[in-house]
Amino acid sequence: MDYAATGQEAIARIVAATDLETLEALRVEFLGKQGSISGLLKTLGKLDPEARKVEGPKIQGLREEVSNALTARKDALESAALEARLAAETVDLSLPAPEAPRGSVHPIAQVMDELAEIFADMGFAVASGPEIEDDWHNFTALNMPESHPARAMHDTFYFPDRDEAGREMLLRTHTSPVQMRTMLAQGAPLRIIAPGRVYRSDSDATHTPMFHQVEGLVIDKDVHLGHLKWTLETFLKAFFEREDIVLRLRPSYFPFTEPSIEVDIGYTLINGKRVVGGDPSKGEGGWMEVLGSGMVNRRVVEFGGLDPEQWQGFAFGIGVDRLAMLKYGMDDLRAFFDGDHRWLNHYGFSALDVPTLSGGVGTPA
Ligand code: PHE
Image (cartoon, rainbow, N blue to C red; front, side, top):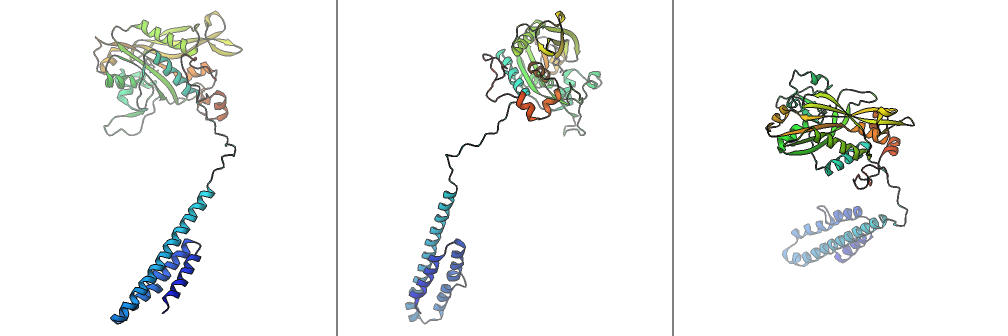
């Protein structure tokens, strides 16, 4: 048998292969179990020892030659494929950049940042709690036992099932449960705000089933109503960036504060638009309720694991959506949650417009 000719023919076909599949078919044809060269190796067994000594190395040499050719061709084909891919994937840096999609910061998010900035300047840290809350944190520990009539006023979304511990679960109706969670977790003294979403089953032009509040809580020694009033006035002046803010403090009732105070902010009408500032009793305008507050009820201080003889404090809950409407001149709360990009283009903020006290917390760019 002319091994040299067999080898040459095989190698010629290998070198001519232009893709990896053809090459693999050739490998099987020559070196596979039923392959022609494998077949030659099998014939060795039938030869007598002398002949085998002569033929053996020749067939082995042929096998090695073909095997090497296969490997070399495979490498060549693979690197050619890589080259082709790299060439196809080049980026033309001279092309104009595609227009970047432009998003905007929602006014609620912006106002939340403004609030955090203002309160941080007054020494408040930011705390948070779960939106899926249990009945104890949302009501009981805030001095609203099961039979308390104030519970009915909250239009609560309850979950049909209790949790593993058998507790009734609900969507928090206010951010006040964070007061309790923070007292229990951190003790006293405390100075925190807790911004977040709250839920009530209520819906019209001024109420949405989900809305936003910022809770405030200060616990310390010798805290009194004057501290509360100063804090709220200072905050509202910084927020609206006006010194002529007029507040109306009305006695109110919340189970978790005693005494309780609701705060209205005065606005005047300019070209039919509500503008915060000035005294509404001296011209055309009115009052808008923006927050509930009061001195923390001593029962709540006790539920929070603190001694009310030693620790007192004040708390407030601010309606964020209403503040945003007043500050940025929007009149329908529902538009906040429609997700209409035309509205967002108009009222949204640039991501670079970060509220700072020195730059004016909320001056739109
Ligand atoms: N949690 C009250 C509400 O949602 C507001 C509030 C907070 C009142 C803190 C007093 C103190 O209506």
